[in-house]
Every structure is written in structure tokens, then in C-alpha cells.
Length: 289
Length: 257
Image (cartoon, rainbow over all chains, first blue to last red; front, side):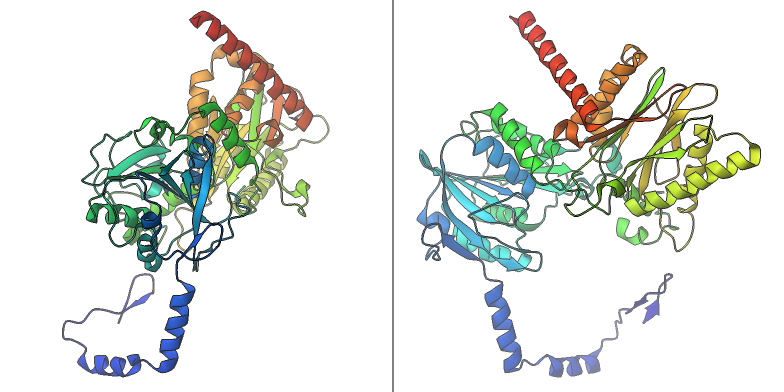
């Protein structure tokens, strides 16, 4: 053990090995039936369930096996979701196909009947006039242990390669690795990261090294890379992680990309819808003035 | 790299950063947007005002504060707005107000805007150099007129620096507002009091989503008392601004045609 300058006690690593300690630890680690039951219950609680819209029953196969698509647009996070709602889903008729229900320490998804921008949900839609166009709006946090389940239930264990996946999400600008101070960065700004099979050009510059991404967007992009699916992630670095007009508008260049072209028809109306979304939830925080 | 040198305020990183001070600047960005403009004969302070929780008394959520309030002959000449941690703002405002009165009692002269700004900045700097304390998570815009009748606008930040500005913005999306001000702040724009007020409101409308009802505005004209704008007055200004915008757009489309 060692004490640091600040008084924390830190276990110093020992190269001599800790054989005796290991034996004692193993004895403690042996599972009792009680442990197994707790683990089982926890796994059941943390299960990701994909439900069909009308019947609210679980899907037997993965979502994309049941509803094959050629274009899959996934918005993760409230600003990305607001962008899709305002600019893409304002034109055409979108039908809800199903939703994902999950629970973790950070969020519990709500029922999809009355969705508000401040709640957590994960809903899938397809365009009625062209059911091969699929959209996912995910404003809930999917924990690390749930990401693989989510992928399996949405994409399946053997996904088709003839679809294009576009992921939209936001990160705080302090996550952007740069030697400049964050104050001098032109936030919000867009960066892209794509899989090897994505041959089109991105609408913005690629994320420079070290190009590290996190959470569900990282899981989806990795999955697409492994299964050779053309996919691109558009990441908006912003200073404001809550629902913010300027952050959502930073996604606008994507409207001219091949994946979203033809889907966004009425951009001025989109801006109006966005403003309405913003006004619904702006309570003054007491901590920050 | 950052995580090894950001746990204590009194530790520099090898490349010279004081991470806690930089993180304090991030706290400021979590607050609302505030804008300050120094006109020729007027100073304007505007701030985004979000709706208050239903059961909360709105009177206790005032953002623009007077730092000195001369009794009898003089009017309030120094206004300030602090953005960032509310509690830190309250503490610093109290200290500044006490300093204003103490100065007046000691030397029989009211403080100058620069003096009180320097006092606040020095106080903030002290907290970046003490063990066991953290920096104040607030930036301030301080406006006012000195006895010589010259308008002033100063900005301070958590590191304890202060500078004079012609126009500036702090808080959420401050960069966007500052860019707007850089494009639109001209000597003509601020020569007229009404134009200066409109400039402040237009700058805020760049980032305030819900329009005039979510803006708080205060002005001081030379040798006149402080004026807090009512919601109606702000709405009137916003309507005028929208009219001007429409007319400018019509002219543009005519030109293009």
C-alpha cells in the first residue's frame, strides 16, 4: 500500500505475486445458489426486448430479418432524434414498426404512446411509401452489457450486406481529442467515421486520430465493420448536450448526403417543428444560472 | 494525460494547463446566454430567461443585479450578470456589493467599473491558487458608467482574468452570439440607443429558442436611472426586429429578381 500526495491509499502492484491471497479470494468467489438466482434475476431485468407495435409481443426473429431494409438511419441521443423528427420524419408517412424496451441504472424506456423529448425511448419506423427505408430513434442509454443484445435483436446474427447504415449522434466537445483548447473549437461541428465498405463520400471531414467513439454508436459501427455492411457515423461535437437548436442544426449538411437525399423534403417546415420541440422543455436549472 | 493533473487545483500539467480552471470554464457554458453591449451613450445587458418551475417564486430567480446603488443623489451605475454556478454567483455578488460600500465609506467616492471588476477578478484568481478550494464556476459581464460619463463593459472568467469589451457574450453558445456581434457591431449600430438595444436582443435571439418572452433586459443611459425592460417592452422590440428582418428579406429577393 502506498499513500499519494493527496492522501489517497493506493494498492501498489507487487511483482512477487500474491499466491496466498488468491487462494482465499477463490474460496470467497465460489457461487452459491443464491448468487446464481440473483444473477439470473438481474439478467432478466436487463434484458433488451424488441416488441412489435400493435400486438406488443416480442419478435421471434431479429427486426431486420422480419423487415429487410436497404437504408437504415439510426439517431442516438436527444439532439440527433430531434433532427430526424424535424427534418426527415416531417415529410412522408412513417409507420411505427416496433420498439425496444430496456432497463439499466441510467434509464428506463417509456411506452411509445406519448413520447416527449425529455423521455427515454427506442422506436423503429419505416416509410410507408417505401418500407425499405428504416429509421430508429433511440434516446435511451444502452449499457455496455446490453449493446450486444440490442444488436442481435435488431440486426440479427447474420445480417444482409446490401443495406446502408447511417448513424447520427452527439458527444460533448471535451471528448474531441485535440491539442487546442476547447474554447477555440468551432463547436458544434460534425465529424464522420465510416466502415471499410462505405464507398460514398462523407458530408464532413473524417474524425482524426485518435478516433475513439463510445457507447451504442461504437457498437453499431463495429458490428457493421465486422459484417462488412457499409455504414457511416456522423458525430456532432457540441458544448450543449441538452436539446439545443444550434446543435440540431449542425446536422443539416447530412441532408444532402445520399442516405438522406429525397427523404427531407420540407426544410423550412423542419425548422419550425424543431422550434416547437424546443419550447416544450426549458425549465431553469437551480444549480446553473 | 489530463486525468493525472486535474484532481487538484494547485497542480500544473507538464504542458502548462490548470485543468480545474479550464473545467470551471465548462461550468460557465452550462448556464444561460448573456450578452453585454457598450453603446456611445448607453450600456445594455441581456440574458436568456428560462421558465421557472411551477411552484417556485419567480422573484428569487433574478439574473441581472445592481452592484452599487448610490443613495439619494446618485442612481445605480453598475450592473452585472454572472453566468455559471448560481451559488458561486450569489457569494461573489455579495462580496462585490460589500466592497462597493466599503470603498465609498473609506474614500467617499463610488467605485469605478474597472475597480470593482478588478476586485472580482482578484477574488476569483485567489481561488485558483489555494489548496483545498476550487475556482468559482462563474463568468461575469459588468457594465456601467464612471463619473467621467464614459460607458464601460468588462468581462471576467473563472481564471481571474478581466478585459474591457465593446460587446461580448458569455454562457451557453456564447461563441455563436459573439460571432453575430462581430458581424453586426458597428459604430452606427451603437450610436443610437435604440439600435444598441435592438442589437442585444437580436444577438440573444440567435440562440434563445422561444423568442422575446424568454429574454431579460436592462439598460443604463448616461445620467439616468437603471431601467429593467418589462416583457411587453421586449416583445415590442422583438416585433420591430422581425418587421425589419422581413423588409430586409423582401429587398434582397427584389434585388435578386
